[in-house]
Image 1 (tube, rainbow, N blue to C red):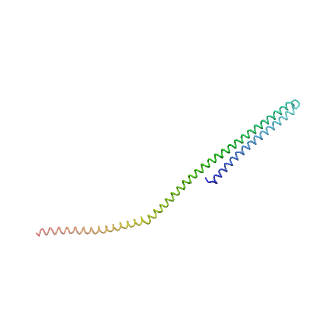
Image 2: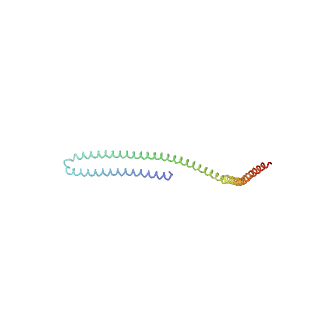
Length: 195
């Protein structure tokens, strides 16, 4: 993976993390809006009931108002705590992802470096083989093929001489055979004649 591809992958990961954070932020806004809506609804209900029971419940309303403020403060504190905890978790997850990405990048870099070294070794071997093949081709063209042609020429010349010699030998064989017959015939005649 090239540096540009790695930067692009890191950018994509950063965009995904930003997208996740934006989704969490949107969910928190939705929760806040829902709480505001529910609180507004509760306030409206309370105002309606207070309007009807204002005279009877004035003292209880003060107490209820104080309780509501306390609960809202408590709820606000809880929400702040949860949001702080969520923020810490998101920061921790981002940090963990960064560390994981850096480790993966380092492993990938080492792996790529090892593969590049192997490729360089293979390229060097190929270059050596090409040189050796070229030397063999030159040796074959300049030494072996001329010697083979010379050997072939010698064999062809030798074959031709043997061929000519065989034809002459066959003629000599026929002549010797004829001479044997004539000599044998003359020997028989001379013996019969008593000589």
